[in-house]
Image 1 (cartoon, helix red, strand yellow):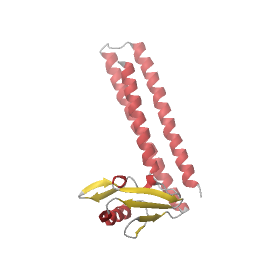
Image 2 (cartoon, one colour; image 1 turned 135 degrees about the vertical axis):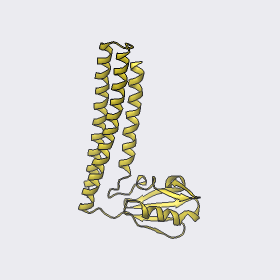
Image 3 (cartoon, one colour; image 1 turned 30 degrees about the horizontal axis):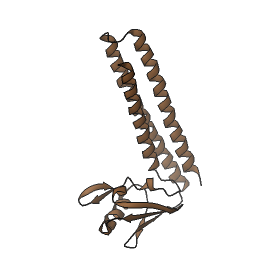
Image 4 (cartoon, helix red, strand yellow; image 1 turned 90 degrees about the vertical axis):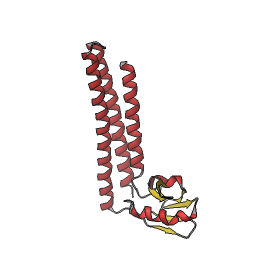
Length: 185
């Protein structure tokens, strides 16, 4: 029962770290990356749809993203969605494809993005801590109802803390990598 609970929380913590990784990938650096725009929701056939589901996204150069919609009639709504996003990008279209030039980041914008990265990492840590808290409560309840002994409870808490610490360390590594990437000129 305890092992099953710990495996379950480990999977959930792993998913929280993966979600954080995806969020950080969407934060713009000086380089072009499909991850910058693939999450943008585009109004397509009356339904908000992720851009990656309605267009091909490629990066032929370090500072250029090319979006090729599978349905040409969606070009205008894709451009509108990109402009409405908080990425600060200006798309240009020739009727077939959309080109997005990635301008170099100013020092001020880099600092703003680092603050955003730190905020998202802190939210990820809070998510992991909340998962730990839920399991601690569950273990406490199991001990109270005599389903596990005090020793099992203590061992489980120690394992849970090691798990939590390792995932918190992972989030810190993600933060450091993203900050380093943002500070590259």
